[in-house]
Picture 1 (tube, rainbow, N blue to C red):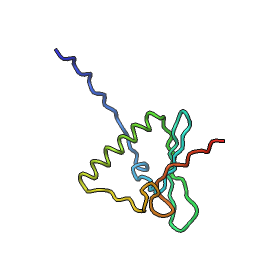
Picture 2: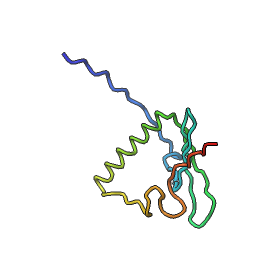
Picture 3: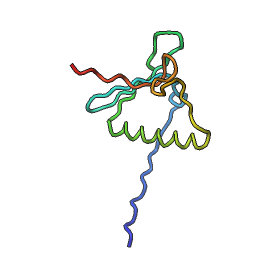
Picture 4: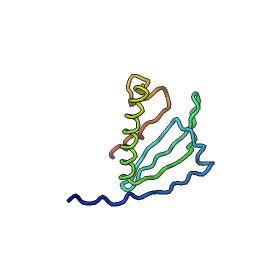
Length: 110
């Protein structure tokens, strides 16, 4: 006889009107400590040298990895439905031009 599956937990998620409007970001900066990841979502206007952080999300390493896997899965579903997302620039890691989503540089060993 198979083991019965535990009942699935239901989470009640509330989304207030202000948060539902969302925040536009065209620049993300990421850094980490041994205990947490910091994701700063910023907005930068082309032709300027300033970016304004709109939101900072702090997550555990485990939740950050869950997020990475969820993003990967959803990008795969999106591309299956709408086609490949093209990255501009010679090297996809460099992105297009002077701004975009990048990881923070690794600290140099001293």
